[in-house]
Structure formats: C-alpha cells, structure tokens
Length: 133
Image (cartoon, rainbow, N blue to C red):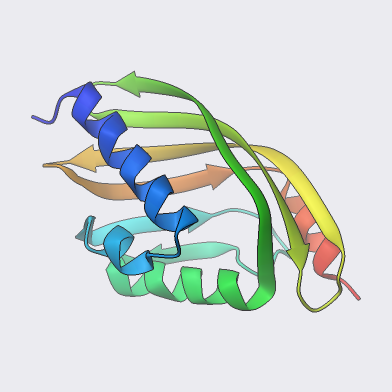
C-alpha cells in the first residue's frame, strides 16, 4: 500500500508537472482505467474522461480553451493513500477574453503508486458563464 506521504509527494509532482506544461509526466502516472471527472452542466470541459488517453483529451481541451493565470494548490489532506487538495485558480477564457477565478478541491484516488481516479470541484457555473460570448 502506498503511504499517505508518498501519495502527497505524487500529487505534488503532478502539480509541478502541470506548472511546467509536462502533461506526459502526468499521464504516465495514471492507471490504465483512471477516471478523470469534471462536473458542470454547460461547462466546456465537463465530463468523465477514461484512462491516460481521456486525461490527455481533457488537457488538450483545457489548453485550447483556457489560459491559466494562477494555479495555487494549498492544503493537502490524506485518507490512507488518497489525497484531497484545496486550492485556488484564475484563468482567462481564450474565446471570450473573460477572466474567471475559483477556489477548488481536487480528489486523487491513489492505487499502487498511480492515480486511479481524479475529480475536481469548483465554481463550474462561473466558468460556464465565462465561456459564453
């Protein structure tokens, strides 16, 4: 079983990779059946993506539609090998030029040292509105 400390280090390494644009690093640390879930009716990125291929599609859509201005993971909480992170982000929507910000919570389920499920929880209504022309 992966220790909580190791799981937090894994998640921190994923955030660092996201910050430097190394999506390949993230994809290599997902299980083949990983569930990658974004809620939000009317939000362009909402849906459940499956496996590293699905997560790659999510990151492609994210890059095409949003420019991340601030991305700040804050507090980390663990339960066995799983990690919940509270943070803040601010983005500019490429199509509209609108800026939007939200606090978020991300849940990482970790199995055998890899992420087997990820979900994010944030103000999807604000993001959906920012995407509207």
